[in-house]
Amino acid sequence: MNNRTKEAARIAMLGLLLGCFCTGCNDGVSVPGDCQKFLDQFFQALKSNDVSKLQEISIPESAMELSGTPPAVADRMREDHRRMDKTQLEKIKQMFGDFDSYSVQSVKSSPVTEADLQPVNMQDSKEFSAGTHTVIICKAKFSRASGRFGFELIKKTPESEYLYEAYRFEAQ
Image (cartoon, rainbow, N blue to C red):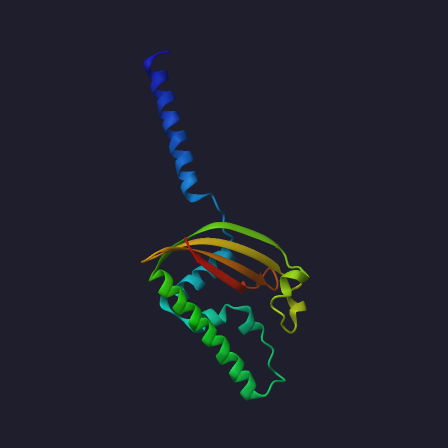
């Protein structure tokens, strides 16, 4: 083996090593554009403590059919939902500190099933039967600690935007 061959082999090995290292860091998770849009909206709302934005992208707020409900009851339901979102934001900030960044660890999508719609227990849930259910797991970095977020997303049709059915978080 001459020196040129040895040098070419070393460069090839170094390239393979760097390629494996970089792939391991990124986990190679492909995030569909509509999921990425949802994540950007969610984490921006988290960073800016924007309760109204969280309500816009949640299923309960957007799917709440209150047309036959007395206005006082509908207002109270919306206020309770807003208060829950505000409490969640405060709890996240207290546990983790200020939001810094996130990375997606896994994305799994499938057609919506009846079981996916049961926890929502909303009127007109049949509208979602042609939709997509996606579960996303993210790692988020904050000023005090890192956390793991799990999202249960549903969208009505392939053209509609994702809404969150639920999200959960835990410290890492």
